[in-house]
Amino acid sequence: MQSRNFVPADQIRRLWKGMVISVQNICAEMGINMKIHESAEDYLETILILKERTGQVRSIDIATEMNYSKPSISVAMKKLRENGYIVVDKDGFITLTDAGYAIASNIYNRHRVLTAFFISLGVNEKTAAEDACKIEHDLSEETFEKIRQHAMREGGILESI
Image (cartoon, rainbow, N blue to C red):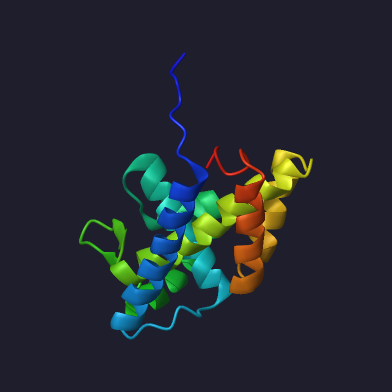
């Protein structure tokens, strides 16, 4: 069994705060408003997850993961490409731009924190993930930050993410 190294809570707080500030600074420097449609955030998050899982992403992978039709994904990818969130190479492989990555990682981190928090409350893992997905886009930064701080104070809640 592999041993786990745990990072002290104060170090996680500093890293998290630095990451949020970095995402906001990158977007501000690029003139990007991070407020985009929830569906676009879902596509970007899915691209990030698939990239981490498999190392490469194509439209068909997104369609399969999200259980959407290939034509729907094609339309969405065109919009994301036109808005500068993704790049599609000649072989059809999709890569997040810096702006796309900033948005995707922000949403994915929210999802993971909220899921872990709900599980700590006794919600089963499947329901916790589904509920996190429903609110990760709409929760204010202030409320999310308070949930995150509470989870960190409780110790152990965020260690699994």
